[in-house]
Image 1 (cartoon, helix red, strand yellow):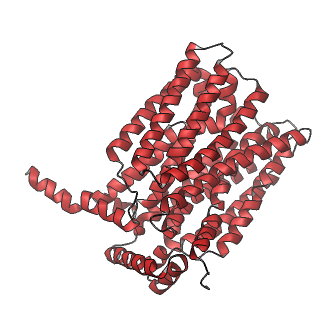
Image 2 (cartoon, one colour):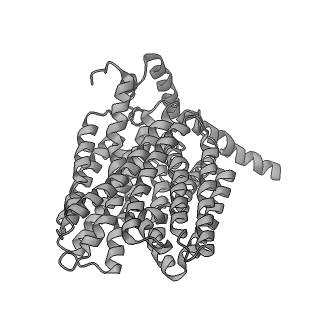
Image 3 (cartoon, one colour):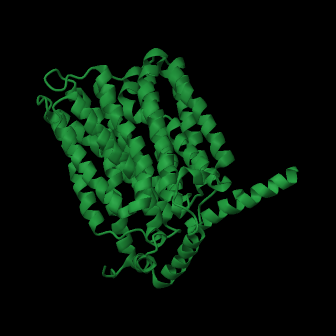
Length: 472
């Protein structure tokens, strides 16, 4: 591969190409909200409430397994190759959902689409973390979050445009779904021009190629220094066997997995996807009419994008740990106020506007602080040999909790009401703050190899033996 004139611009090209996976993630999770009412028509798929839930949640279930197995596959076959394969799966599944003649076929292709979404959610951040210089890693990985929220906003806007312009056309939902094939093609074309991760290459013994790639995306001096660090990390892993779950029985690796899973679960128990998937219903129950609620829900997508942009600006200036705690404190407070005002102002004309304002503020904290930090931490804390497996397991738990919340939220809303439902999320938010405060270390300003060294020294076997000796 010919060396580009400007390695910084080439690095940006790599980032943009890979994050089309994030755009697809966002679009495919957001588009179904606008498509469902049209699918439900008797002359189309004739969905019932149960089959609506299956069509929606089948993607989330597929995403859980896509994240889990995607991590293993990317460790074995390479980051770039697997993202290329993902782009083809995105394309196939998008076309499959577009032409689905019945509910069963739709659910099958939504599940396949979920496999691609889940794979992208674990592979893309890990790939970006390995390509980025440590001082820019936070911003590069967090920009994937812009593409995710941008994809959701794009879905809301396209749904609104097509839903209004083609409201009398029963199969308008097919046009909504097929549009995701375009970014799938862009992801494929973009990744053809992207090199493989130098860290993955080095882990497979391709050291000359790893150094060559580093010199494409770094200046000469930095490339040599970083290559030496990567070589040292690979040397430490050389005598270890292929990555398996047994590896996490080692105390310091078990600690890393605990942090990865915990941060992923904390991301979801904020209740963010109860708002992203059911925002219209929340606003309707607070007192808005359907049309007003739909418009407000589109605004939520815009706020999410703006908040992520702010979060990326912040993440290079603020440490990860306090940023996450501030974000969780903000979202938990917003949910508490929504629950409180839903009781105090019940039936009041002011309630829907209060709920809308708090929903917007919630998303500002969520997408500006919690979202960027979550994806960054799960991509950077695992050592090279276990990065794909570890991040895949972490994101698997994220999607499982997402699936549980997505399935149970409308049931809670129906049986216990808006206020009690959000009090449940307040309690979960407090648990999340406690977890981050107690278990999550600071990773800002450290190379990936330095993060590994921190966990080895603090929670390694030597420390465990030392503690046991003191106990005796």
